[in-house]
Structures are given as structure tokens and as C-alpha cells.
Image (cartoon, rainbow, N blue to C red; front, side):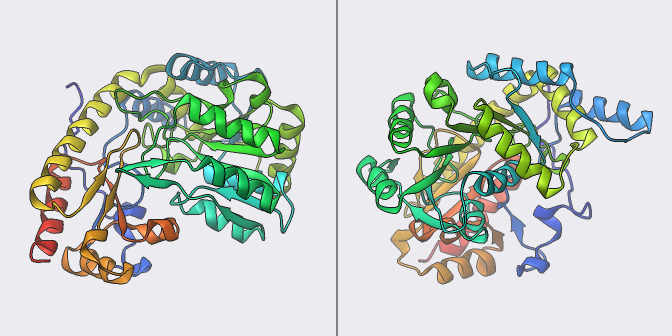
Length: 391
């Protein structure tokens, strides 16, 4: 490998959310974190070099994306995902979560129903409820270690609650599903028939394991594309979350105007200059780094799978199809959510994302971020095994 992903980089004392704010969030100071979805790897050298060049320039005034930026994003989407966004469809936001909030405000009114599929990324719920919308859940069904969509329930929930908006997570966080084109077509058709707009969070789309293919929802058909807000970002892919840059594609002109108006009313205009420069460099030159990273993450996954099978056989690992997040089923221990969290935090000394925050359907599960050097991950797994060894 050209890049040293085994290097342990000390992130403490850098105002790092993952490592520096445990006490503020109610955890022990020395807890070892595997929760928030960012990586403990230095980003691609091409990104660092571009940022160094811009910092040396020394002026950080208002900045907008130019033709070169748009070309880099378009080329990435076309070459990596087989989809070419429509000209003029791009709107930049400081993050996908921000875009979800703007979409809820743009395409629904207080009291309107918004559909999600739990267990799902917890800001989905907080954004819906925080904006005084009605949260409607069509839960994914765990069958033989694999999450599936209950299409009958999905459509019934839409009609019963007169759902206006569907927040889709694909690849799915935390379940790790990468939906097939057939699944996406079926969900999208149901939404289309009932006048439901879809916000498709595809932020993890660059992390898909061999044997699976990410399908951009808007690529399913031209008709479906007119009802979809596609949310992408380099933040997960290249570990750039702190630079706050996301690329949101809306092909329908009326939806795009509504969305942009809501953003204008929120007071956001020009994006983070360094975020723009970093994203462009990543998309233009970062693919070799990403390919090596994905190979390293796959090795981390295989080692973790083998470790769990040997040392924690009562924990069921849900086979991921995408993302660098593992969804672990601890229900065989018969513990309450609080009991499970107490063991993991206070006995194992680990900070994972508790399953219950992803919705009731996540109770008894834990989410583990494996995007770190193997030595760090191995330490965490050993601590986890020690805490559960006699249970």
C-alpha cells in the first residue's frame, strides 16, 4: 500500500468531537470511541496539498463553486456511480443533515407526515420531530440476518398517514444495506403513485463492498428523478466532515427553487472555501487513496468478523453490504438497553452508538465504526470481549 492506514494519529486535544468531548456528552474521560462516523485516517495527500496551497495564499473571502468544481463532481458521479446529474441541478449545503432539514421545511408543512425506515440514522427522527412534522415509521424487517423492506407496510403507511415526504438512507446506516435497483424501483414507484417526494441520503455511496452496486435513486427513471432530492458529499469518503461541504442534486426545477428559497431564508449562501477546494481535489485526484482505504476497511471487517465469531459468539454481526459501520446484535444476552450500554461504557470502556437511538427497532443493537487503524480496533474488540466473557 502507498498509504499507511496503520498509523495511529493522536486526535486528542484537536477539538475533535470523537475524542475530546466525552465528558460533555456524559461519558468517562478515558472512554475509547467507536461512535461518530468519521475516520481516524489522514485524508488523501492530494487534498492536504491543495489545502496547504490555499492556506499559503492567505485569503479566505466569499467563494462560490466554479466550472472546474462542477466538472469534478459531475465526473465523479458519472465514473463512480454511472449517473450524470442534470445541468443546473446542483445546490451546495454545509452538510447532508442540513439538507434533510431544509427539505423537510421545503416540501412539507407542520403536521405533515414524513416516512422513514427504522432503525435508521437518528437525525432523521430529530429533524422530523423538531420541525413539528409527524414521524411515520415503516420498519425494516430483519430476516435470517438480512434486512428487508416490507413493501406492503411501506405503502400502507403512506396511504394511511397521507405521507408527503420519504427520507431514504442508501447505503443504509446503520443496517449496512445497499438496496438493489429492483428494490429502489419498487419503493420509488409506490412514492410516485402517491405523490410522495423522496430525499435520498446517499452519503455512504462510495463505500460499497464487492458483490454489491450502489444505484443512484434518481437514475432509476426520468420520471422518478423529477421527485428525488439526491444528497451526496465527500465528507465520509475522504474524511472531510469538518470542512462542511455537501452536493445536493435536484432535477425538478420547481422543487429546486423551493429548496433554494428555504436555504436563502435560513441565511446560508456561499459555502466554506476550504471545503470547496478540498472536495474538488479529492474528486479529481483522490481515487487511488480511496481504493487503498476500501481494501484496508475490508481487512478490518474480515478481522472483526473472525474475532466476534471466536470471542463473542453470542453477538450476531449483520453482514454489511456498504458503509464502514457495523451493526451488532447483542439481544442474545437478554439485557435492557440501559444494561447493555452500562456494560459497554463502564466495563468495556468503549463508546459505541447505542442501538436504541436509531429507533425502537434498534434496541439491543450497537453500532461500531471500524474506520480506524487495526491496532485501535483490536484493542476495542479485546475490551468488548473481556466485558462479556462471563455473560
